[in-house]
Image (cartoon, rainbow, N blue to C red; front, side):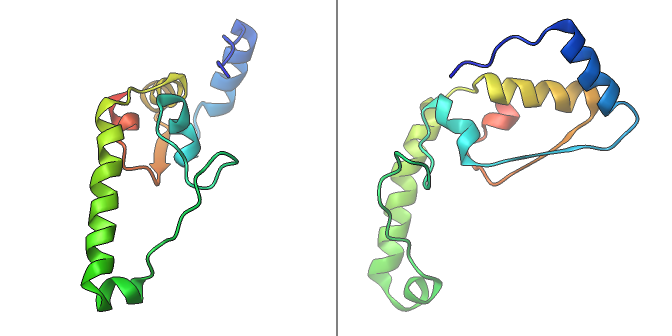
Length: 112
C-alpha cells in the first residue's frame, strides 16, 4: 500500500515533536517487503525450518544448508531498491538526526 503524502500541518507537527529530542526508528523485515524482500513471519511467509545453534555446530550438513540458504537470500538483496518507507526514515535520520536501528542486512536503509 503506498504511503500517502502528508499534509504540511502534519509535517509541522512531526517536526515540532522531534525538535530538541533524541529519537530512534526501530525497523524490521516488514519495511523491506515493498522492495521485494519477503519477511519471514508475515501472513504470506513460506514455512521455515530454522537451524538451531546446536545443529549448526554439530553437523556439517546443517552448516552447508545454512550458508546455501544465506547465499540464495542475498541474491534478492542485490536487485532490491529502497522504497518509500526507507526514504522516509532516511529523511528523518538526515533532517532530525533520528537514529535508525534495524535487524535488516539488506542495506536498503543505508542506500536510501
